[in-house]
Amino acid sequence: MLTVETLKKNIKNKKTSPIYLIWGTEHYLAEDAIQTITSLLSPDEKDFNLSVHNLDEISVQEVIEDAETMPFLGDRRVVIMKNAVFLTAAKDKAKIEHDLKVFEQYIQNPTEYTTLVIVVPNEKLDERKKIVKQVKAQSEIIQVSQLSNETAEKWLLKEAESSGVIIEKEAIELLLSRLGAKMAVLAKEMEKMALFVGENGRITKETVDRLVARTLEDDVFGLVDHVVHKRTEQALRSFYDLMKQNQEPIQVHALITRQFRIINGVKELSKKGYGEKQMASLLKLHPYAVKLASKHAKQFDETFLRDCLSDFAETDYKLKTGQMDKTLLLELEIVKLSQS
Image 1: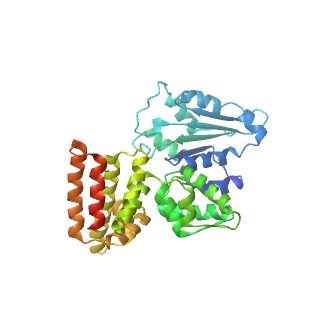
Image 2: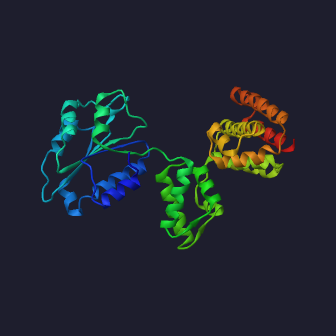
Image 3: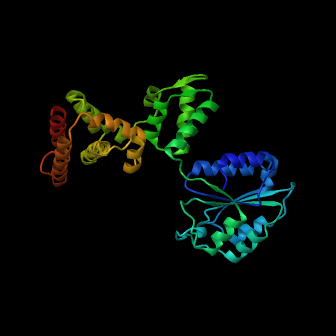
């Protein structure tokens, strides 16, 4: 199985395969791999010898017919076959009849002048299918799954280096906490921040906070931070800002509840001796979120947190049954929490 980086090295050294299988849900990496393979063709050759087919719109036998067509004004063809759903357990919603026997025959004996790229934008292949085993046996496989937080951190450091800037660890943590390990989004934000700080500049946590759009969850986290540190006026101001943005009180309350559940979970796991990385894995959170929750957890005892969660359940019921004005109900809750 190849990484995209290894693929780039192989292509640079003219080491190629007649068939590539690219599968996984990280679209940015998949496109990077595809662009790398198509670089086998010069710009002029691409006009005549590069084909991109979507199996939602064309049959696999037509794609194979294209792959068997001799190149024109060049020595090689590159044929991209996207959305090969028949290699997964998912149902193919397109009303296209695919003759998989034709496809099987081709992968057993591919033409020497064509590079066929099979793209499957799914998390899993259906390993029970004979065709999947055949494709895997005859292909160079490039898995493009979403990066782990650790891998994403390394990737961001490399992106910063290639852009001629430095990015601090806290900036990376905040960026991943805010956006997740979505490479296409991260790449755009990195480009924007690199331009902002300039060559040899430094991307800090403050840079991220200033330039990367905050989510509703970020704003609620800020509100909770005010509550935790007994800043009643700032907490209410944050809440009123959310109301001005026409945020739904029920959703805001649900996110406040979630934050306190995280704080409670971190406190319980910390008491059992778990480290931040272990807690992040168990709670399915970014380590940075756990780090912040750990700081908040120190401000409360376990009894208070359990009482809070019980009160939240009661507030949720009142919100959903219309027993009191929603805004007033949340105002009272925020005041109570920040003054306890």
